[in-house]
Image 1 (cartoon, rainbow, N blue to C red):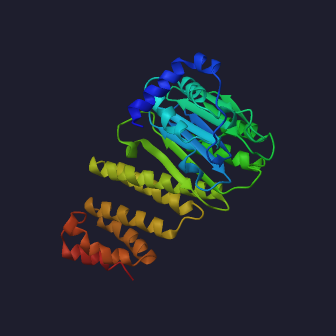
Image 2: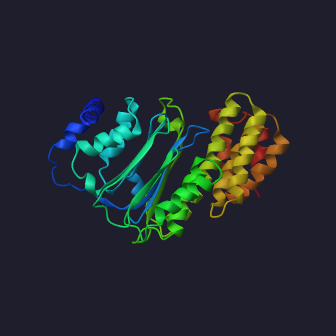
Image 3: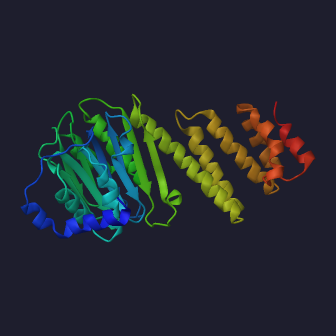
Length: 342
C-alpha cells in the first residue's frame, strides 16, 4: 500500500489502542521464523542511531533490522513480520514515539504472541516486546537509549550479557553494537548455531539523501563465522569512510585534511586482519593521485610504486586518467608515474 496510507493506518491503530485490545484477536499468522538476537540503540553523544543482529538464518539483515537517520531503528524478529520495519519508521517519522509506534503495530495486527520487536526513535525513547509464545529461551532488556532482545537462545543469559557488554564497551556506536553481539555469542548464542549477521548505523539528522545518512550498512548473509566477518567489514567500511572524507576535503581545497583522512584509511586497512591487500593498494593509488594534483610529486611516487607492486593494472589505468581530468595532461609526468611499475 502507499506509504502515506500505511502511516495513516498505523497512526489510527495507535490512537485506538485500547479499543483494539478489547476486540477478539485473530489467530497468529507467523511470517518467516527468523529467531535471533539483536540490539537497537542511540548514541547520546553523536545522535547516531543503530541496530545489529546475528541469527542462524540466511540473510538475516534483509528483513530483521531497519533504520533511518533522524527517525529511528527497528528490530523485528522471532516469527517476524517485516512490515514492522517500514511501518514503524513511517509512524516515528510522522512524530510518534518509538513506544507508541510499537504498541500500535502490535495491537493493530494478529500474531503478537509470537513476535519479538524493539524500536528506538531519534530522541532515544525505546521499547521492546517479547511474545508469550516466542521459543525459549527468550527475553529482552530495555536500558538507557538501547534495547537488547533474543529468542530461541541456548540459555537465558544471552540478553543480560548483551546489555552489560553494550554499556561497558568503548568506541563509537558501531563498535558498541558489535560488542553486544560478541557477548551474546560468547554466552551461548542461538541454540541452532550461527549463519548471518548485519549492522546499520545512521546519522542523527536526515539529509534527505539516504546514501549520505548511512554510516554503516553491512550484511553477512551466509558464513560459518558471521560476527568475525561483520567486524572485518566494519573495519573496511571505516577505512572507506575516511577515503570519502578525504575526497570531500580535496573538493574543499583542504589539502592537509585530505591527506590526513587518506593516511588514516590506509592505516586502518594495513593493520586489520583479513583485509585483501588489493584494498590497500587502491587507497594508496588514489592518495597518490591526490598528491600529484597538489603538486607533491615526490611524495606520490612511492605510493604509486606500492600500488603497482600489488596490482600492475593500476599502471595500465594511469594514462587514461588525464582525459577524465583526474591527472594533469602532462605526458612526461604520466610516464614518470607509470615508470614506477617494476
